[in-house]
Length: 162
Length: 376
Image (cartoon, rainbow over all chains, first blue to last red; front, side, top):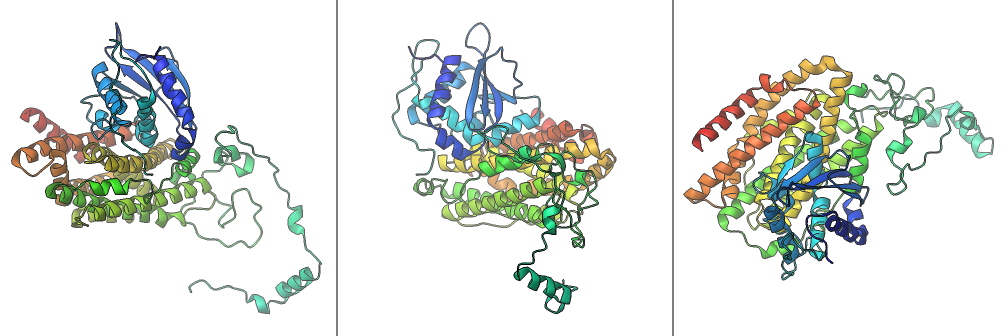
């Protein structure tokens, strides 16, 4: 049964895909941050997940009970997350309107929450690694809470130069 | 040739005699008996490899380095035995709090693993396939001209200071060497992108260059770092994020994500350096404020320079029609407020929360915010 977004299982699937792409992520460099993903209207209360990256790997996927301090939290309604993931699934990678930076820049779609500007800046220090991590969703078969699925891939979009 | 040897070695009897005896097998070997601190550094995390943090042991380490470096004035690497007669290189910066930053060794390792290549990591062929409309293309070429100007000086500043820091500040020197490389790559990529738009380089900006000259001519490394790493690069980081936001193609988005990674690392060093200064040399607080008073005047002139502001308006509004320009002004104003907010947020986190009360830039930003709110 495919994992549902949002869930620990969904992020575990991304983590497995990341492990498959170890060489690609090693080329991007050290990736040391812990951040949260918060989906505001996924149920009775916001769903929150904590992703920890160390060296070149995702080393932990936890739910809201994680005691790890977060550098920042990406927060938004399910519709905004869905728009991003649908776009990635359809194209293989986010297009110009759906990159993490674009969606969060003015907080119109997704929002970046943080207490420490140094933690906030890690979103940008590791921008390409974070974007490529979310782009791996194009390879995951998953469903949304209403049982629907993201659109099938129709146009290849290469993020890296050949 | 301004530095001449005080010895003519070919005429120095003792030196020549020693050389001849060595070559006959009569080795001196006194260096073998130098009492040394023996260490066997190992990676704490084998996946990460052997890092500078793993070398932070005893006299070789940085944790026990004194605030003022009085002993080593030469090129001797920290921890090496200092022979008699080493030259005094007259480093300009010999005080740790002038250069040090929490986690500087970590920023260096991160920089080394996150290097990228402007020639091969950008899908240049795909970018060629996207022809930009004339107004967007020219505005983008103007923005790229401005960014090339900025990155050239951002290369010069760390390079200028590199050889002026005491050799004991090994990790800082290495970090700013990576920064010079990063900034050179940024100048390279913006020049390449400008020349690949079909419009070439547009107009240099006098107001921007006044600010760049101010950055270059700082009286001390601490002043240069405050205005380069924390103020200018902090503002440029927000600008890169905005540029990614308004980028017309996926290739341009990638370009800005790659440069923003480097810029954020430099800002990280700047923040951790200012924190270090305020924790270890608090009497500098007033000097920092005075420098920022002047720096903020320059930056106000640079940010609102015609050659900077107008391309942003056109790119953000996606054109030159009246309605595009109105939308572009709205978005650009929001960007400028965000840029200034983030700058003051970083200063507050570093230990300068009172900066807002003192700053004319903050007052001007507040007026702009009120005018935007009343227009909405």
